[in-house]
Image 1 (cartoon, rainbow, N blue to C red):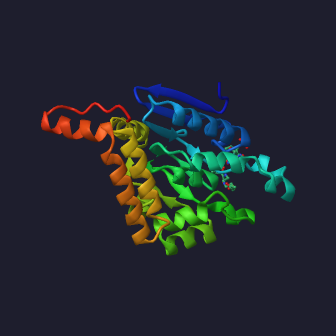
Image 2: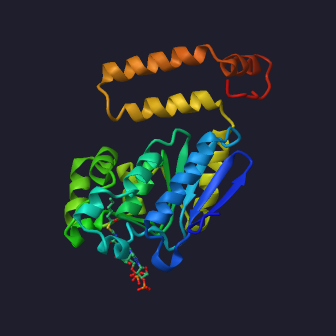
Amino acid sequence: MPHTLAVHTHQAVCLITLQRPQALNALTSELLAELAEQLQRCASDDSIGAVVLTGSRKAFAAGADLNEMAGRDLVGMLNDPRQAHWQTITQFAKPLIAAVNGYALGAGCELAMHADILIAGEDAQFGQPEINLGIMPGAGGTQRLLRAVGKSLAMQMVLSGEPISARRALEAGLVSEITPPELTVERALQIAQRIASKAPLALRLAKEALLKAQDLDLASGLRFERHAFTLLAGTADRNEGIRAFQEKRRASFCGK
Ligand code: HXC
């Protein structure tokens, strides 16, 4: 049983809630290890189609745990086991939705940006305050933030350390929707349920293709998309999807 997370599975969606309220869900090695372990479990469980990750009303996560970080020197950072946990989170291949209320700061903002879809409560704050500590983002913050919000706002956030509001995050494209805080998780679960009813192989390849769009040139991205599209043409779920349309019924996908 995880100590720093609550895990609930309902139908095909797993809801993972960060639970270190005494430290605003600051990310310790233990929490990251447990999160990575739960995502690995979800990845290998065919009955789970999507995952929602959330925190509390006050904080999604207020960053890396600074008390733990204070005890690490350069050698400790170089051999940091948390790198492997971040890698596992990055490689999660099923749809991942973050439901963010309150603070999403530093590594907390970076964790939210690992999600494929971000839904934010109206009171959410996104920020990379590492510069205030004499450091800089180290879990993808410079790279993912710039891709999400563009150069000028990313520079402003990372170099000044000032957070942005949920509304600003919506305008900038960091989040796809904002909701009243009490509805954030419910809305994320609703989207996750809808996603989880789709064909798993199509979801997996569509997610991969969209993520590649951030890294590849257009010609390479289009080549990947064509390969993925062709692969799906050979699946039972593609036949089922089209047959269900013709027979005017809801498709029942099997993941093959
Ligand atoms: C450890 C933390 C914490 C953190 C908050 N707490 N953030 N503990 N690590 N990152 C603890 C506080 O010490 C306090 O514990 C309790 O949570 C409540 O926080 P308060 O500060 O009393 O709350 P509030 O006044 O509402 O202020 C909220 C806050 C502030 C603005 C979010 O807590 C804050 O600035 N936190 C640090 C944010 C930050 O700098 N994050 C980036 C971390 S560096 P006690 O015991 O006193 O009640 C990072 C680098 C990642 O993420 C690198 C990845 C490789």
